[in-house]
Length: 300
Image (tube, rainbow, N blue to C red):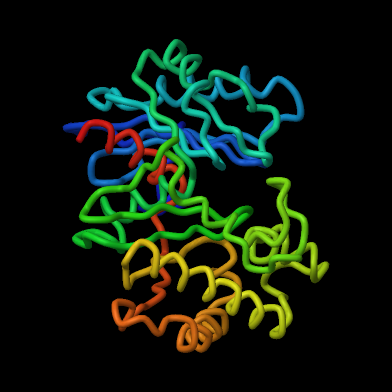
């Protein structure tokens, strides 16, 4: 399930038969990535480019065309899934994220359906991560869990009774906008004190003026405390005792982060139904597998 282990677009796997495959697209601030993923969560082909400063849609359209053309015979995708920072604008069929202003108001779903010739589903990176964990990751076989992805932003999803929760606009899981410091830092959403403004990779590197791997112990400890407060609140609301965590921040900060989370949880999760609340690091299958999970869920 690791993106890095997959063949490139120029070297697809030959002479294989696939039951179902998905065109997967991941949009981030710095990168456009696309690939074809099979129904076991394995990347068959992939390609990516740096996000250009101008003409982003034409660059993505060309990338999608190359990936479809590079897919081996018998691996024609059935659907397309797109993962991008949320929230998602379901009416327009695109993203309303402050991190991707160039895509705001752009009818991405409709445009991709024309280019790819496939039905397209779009969701946030966090909800895509939750779907992927339920499909072929650490949440496989679990009926109830929260999944939180902590990288350039903080996003996630909630699986309850075996189903990813949607909400009124399909944006359940915007954990980065839980308020953890009421009079705190300004957030990209326009509010103040949001979790994202403290524990995202962007926020930590801005605070320390260092790369993530060199984050001082005091900041690691504070990051763990704020995450534990958020996790305890989420668990109390959605009635779960498992929080799956992945992303560049936990990968870089490592066990000291989870030790800080565990210490704070002992004083933040005293409700009887939260007994045994655990925060579990998972490797995650990669952004393209997560995007494929969006497409796969629409077939179920």
